[in-house]
Length: 263
Length: 356
Image (cartoon, rainbow over all chains, first blue to last red; front, side, top):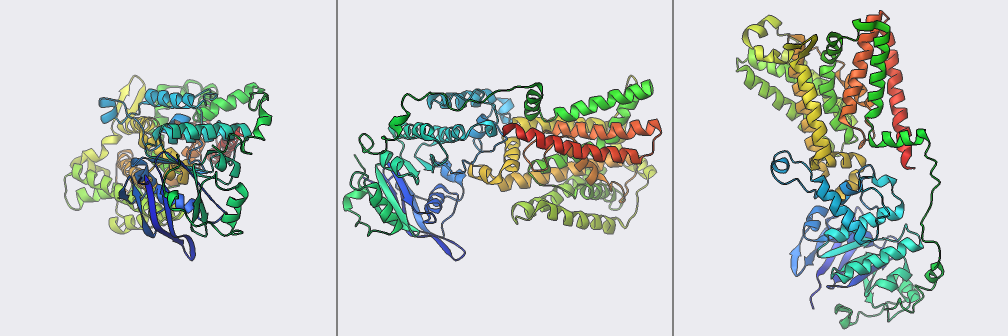
């Protein structure tokens, strides 16, 4: 089976710092792939290189078997890759609906849309409300309230809802539970499973080992700018994974069957 | 799946049976608090209230001498140019920038319109198009330096202010085109100075242009994707970029549009003065920034409405004319406007706390 998203030999340097050092990456259809690694290992750069926020200095990316090269998040999004960044990438002063449709606004049909470029607010608000309701996030009273008036968990929920609503090929989540409480984390994890159940593969970057071991089908361990190994959560313990990613323990050879998706 | 028996769920099972409500806040919705919320959603309300209060106070002090259609429309005529330049300034400030070159672009554009007509004998309407193109070009230079070279807007426009103003004096040889010549040969240059009456009210086309411009931009900012992107870029450019906004393109178009609006102000300026003078409009920068700030638009970007700017410009106009009619020293006007600027920014900070 072919990976839906594949990267080979990605290199990215920031001045003299090598953030990605000939890094490889594979994401299989329908799976949740966790990416773990110590701080500064280059996880974020890897994700940005895949999602178009950073253009790698070298290396290739394939989506659905076709070679792609994104120069902006917009291009990656156009290809069906949605990302929820750790910073959430939302404009605090704008409304929930505005934020969900940022960069892909709907225009009114007819002359009001084509000539006067008027936004179709009712349609956008309805869509936003439906998506939030689907994900059980409608504790938010008003779809027009500014994002800055929401709690941290609600903001995360809106960002995940945005990605899940539009991501057709891949959804990338960068530390989605880092800022959340126990119950809010649970809701986001359920949400991640919901998204996978719709057949959309997910890349999950997280520091939270229990969360990673709970939802991931495979775990990509990142160390010093490259892929150290890929493991199955059933085969190793959390302390093994931490030992691999910090270099305390020798990493296992990558088994050939690891390139197959988890069943 | 590992979760069924794994350690992941064990600590979470303790939360079963805990209350389902998340965090409850004590809602002490005092009148002040509710007012703060309303202001947070409609930031142009503060200047509107101040404007109405100022009109009421001066009407009480001066009676029908002030509160007449003639005087009130006179104020509109006096703020027409500030309002148009303020519209350009609003766009730039909403992106968390500032444009110090607005006045210089306005004057250079008016000089281009005049000189192209009188020095080269081009048709006046074509000269006006050249003036608008000149404004667009200046804006494009500003926008490119800000968006592509990543230079701070303050520095870019401070430099452009000097460059454009010097270009203006060098090109025009500091020579004024007289009003009579314009009336005889190119009356279209003075189009915005022409007026019409509605009862006692006197409107110039310049006033109409200002009102239409502000209404049009208000629509664009609120109801089009580009307008929403302007706010997003001013709010948090990195977030906007990641969310898929083409930040650099938005910035360049904002500066270009700002330049074109300044050139329009230059055309209106010819109508107001009658002549084309390279020394006119020296205070347009400060006046436009004053209108924007009093109008409740945040200098940190992303917040405020262009209607607020119009109210801000009108507040300054009402104070200037009202105090003049009262016969006070003009310095009182500046003193009061200074206090209003500081007050407006204080209110802006207070409104922001609504989210905290």
